[in-house]
Length: 434
Ligand code: ADE
Image (cartoon, rainbow, N blue to C red):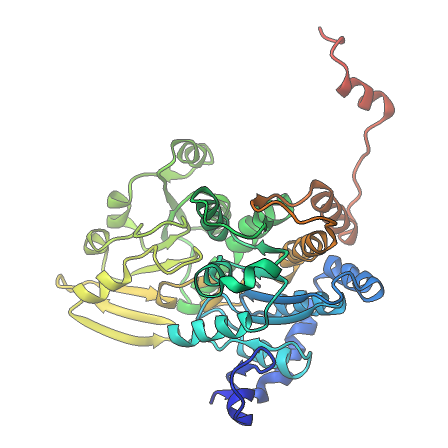
């Protein structure tokens, strides 16, 4: 069942309506949002201050993020700061339907997201977020900023800035800037240390493995795991898979990253060789057709293929479907089988979309605490600018990164040393040597 206030009231779609799978899921959504909040103490601190200071008062915000319990706590924080916030999904398969219902019905944050929505609905939801005429936007993957530039450029003059959550989104924004196409200032939240060093590494590392296990219930120990890409996400996933006893093979195109993988103790080889020996394949590159039909033809019977990069382009799913002589959908939830001419079955997890969000719950709250604290503070920074920010891709100010890192440590009960006066002076001097 799909319920929209728009269809219920007969009104035309606008940002004040919402779209969720089933309003009855809201109660469960509230429970899960509150559970996640327990592990998000840094964000809670910001929320308390925002409630008092209302730094986002009068600001209309449109956010396009994975609709999860953790995102809900970020939305609550932005609203507590006085923001007039709407949310839509940043991926058709990552929405938690109970959270979508709870945000609209319990927290009063209009949310447009249904797990498994088709492409037309996905874009209708983006349009609904744009109909809010935002002054500030927040993206995970750059679909909202891209849609505003393409379909609603009239909104641009009143947009103060946009935050971007993920590597893929930052790559797209930098391409827009290089092309001279970017027309609003953006903040690359992904580039903050408190984001990529933790979220991408420990978050993706754990949640990707979690997604694979929930989808398939396989034993990880003894399996050959092939990890395509040794960026922060790839190295986090490779380390965790090894931790559970997998034999991990890394594929790379960057010589330095490949070298790091070798020195970290992994086997490194081209995908064409890995294809013959892998049991489980996972792409985390941000690039297109990393696993092609040529690779899949070489795979063992029963090989499992999935992706944890932002878009579903890393595996040539269309090619797989075309070359398969038989397709079996839903062998288990989010597991489809494709039988090739040679009789080998390839199992595709989560339709080739983000396996950690399609088949599990995304990154745990504790790590999203830092990413979303940084998002909230970057938003405040954009809003409090006295003059218009330059139209370019900005870094998060270092002070924000340091504050979030320090507070996270404090909430974990971890104390660290301080530089002594003598050490500060030593670091600033050049006279002392051998
Ligand atoms: N990206 C990865 N995990 C996430 C989560 N739990 N919430 C929002 N975005 C995410």
